[in-house]
Image (cartoon, rainbow, N blue to C red; front, side, top):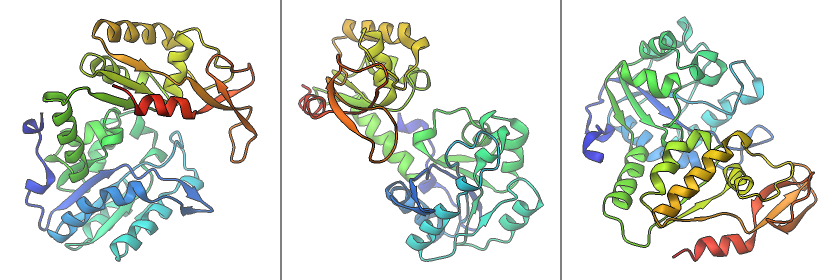
Length: 309
């Protein structure tokens, strides 16, 4: 699997402007990053590029502004957090595809880093617009993708852009690929996988592939609710995709045919509102009231997933 990829650590980046696609979509509290785990995870790759003389232009998204400028979703708190970790300035350029962006990228010296404003402020990003991707490509010499968590999205900075210029996988992306290769090409049995997220539809191909390769699949997040619905369980007002119920049933059938055990929550944490400190209770997955939302898995479900064999 990894033999088919080019990696950033193998490229000569000295003096080159590297467009570095990251996923640093982190939580904020009062306008400050409250958990920088996702940022720190990609920092070794960022630091390697800077130490090897690259001029780094970070491309990222933040939240779901739906193609409009939303001040609360600026990447400035992320840049501030990154600057503290790097111990060097990380300025933010708001004129991403205009003259301001070109000027800011051209002004970088070897070892400098710049972050472009939230790409999802532009509707062309999620539309995978080729012209938008070409405008981004004009900012640099090399594309490095280090956003494994959104690599499945057909967005301009993820799909169209790397097709337009020399491209490579970043360090954390490479680590994910190597882990997947080790797990799927020569696995140690029993082999389990954990998949979460809101939607079955966005991970359909992944799920259909995994159930043919692993011995057990643990599902969580909103995705699990769709599978619970497919099994006839009450999910109340929980996040789910009712139109994917038949698909979920098909995936369960394929899993059964390949002796893959799908684990869904047996007990769940439910509440009538989604907010910090909301009143909640622990319920069986058979006992969710109409107005309640499933917001987490319970202790029994965690124990069952941990003991999967």
